[in-house]
Image (cartoon, rainbow, N blue to C red; front, side, top):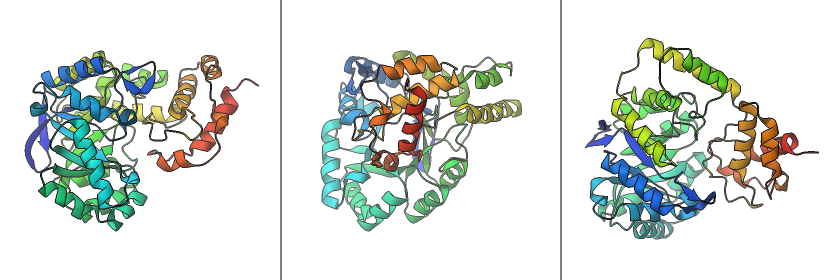
Length: 375
């Protein structure tokens, strides 16, 4: 495993971080983690050098933190730093925040959280956090030893990101960044801005919810025609590790094989390891990807639970795969098998307000239903 600077902190982080938003589950139920396999995966990663484990209050219906707590028993807690997040949308006061933090400490079975983030920050949540003075609360909990370092994860425009960075002396931040999202949200400008100010920069969605691992044929052809023997995952992760401003790349791994693969890639992916030709190949792949992607859903599940019990990310996945791989008949067959289809949407707008990608979810559900429903 390679290790990298984490901003101004006197600590080296593993190039690969273990993300726990997409752990293996039972019967396709995202709330039911396959604990035995997830613990095996987590411990294998740590045994092979990973020292950063990322979770959140809401992941896997609130069960991810519990799983992490179990995985880090038997001496594993002392070998890693834990990152978890305050669900800013569900708190209105310091009392609420303290209750959430104490609940997280119990679930994680630890007396302190190393890296604590304000979760999924955007302009609306930013205004709310300033109004209830989250900073004095964070400083108080830090002084009490419950939190070591303070940061935020981000889903909004660069101008909001810059304002947040300049407002408070954060230790680190977490941004969505990959070779197709260089100009989206914080983007590369945000990466550079945060790194220049001494923040550790954590990368989420390096594979864009798996889309960069299972590329459309036209994008895969761009990579293959380069003559360089490298998997789609290797291209995406190594491109990130090529950049010195990147501290750690979080991968939400769902299978043991993915853990093994990512660790092997992390062993060789280093700063400034890409040459000019490889960078041009990635640039062409990015252009080709955007021309092929129908709906920009990453499968993060922030839109869930839906008030009508629609499995929104799964429906978008069915549609995207049908379009991108020219298998619309297969997509229609899968859609037909769903108990609750997209036309159950009441257009309440809750999903759209939560979507980090700013998708017009109700409109897209209408579109998907019109194209997949057998009339």
